[in-house]
Length: 205
Image (tube, rainbow, N blue to C red; front, side, top):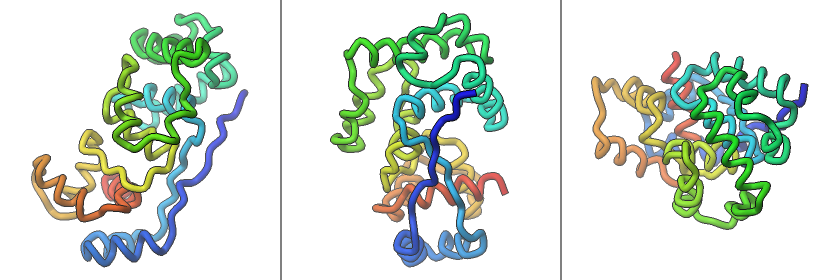
């Protein structure tokens, strides 16, 4: 089985101290929980495929499908995926629609109509604009790439249900509006991604 290269999202005391200073409630939670490691996929194409697989399904299901894809298809690279039949991608346990999105992106990279390495020179907003041109890639998926592949430091996604759930649990809220979410988002800046890592953890406690 081909193995996807992963690493841990890099953060340290600077981010923890800053977030603890601007938000005492979050700071107390981080102290109680201790360090949370977030595994990321540095290769943007591979991370994009992983994010599409992960749309609207459980983490457990994602892990099962992801292992199956690596076993049956081999390396999750543009050239290898472009060679696969769409039905073989779909048979790994995803919808035909998702399989077509993945196939289309791999074809676009192989044919040179998009260079995913270019995104490293772009701002967060520009990356979102570029990636959401692909069918099947919405704002949430693009934001996950910013954080879970590119290690951008200030991503707190309104579109992520688990982050919203973690925020409501942390602050004892029955519901949260987008405006209220935005207040916390701005408070965490410029280290929102580390806040997100802890909000994900809080959401499953």
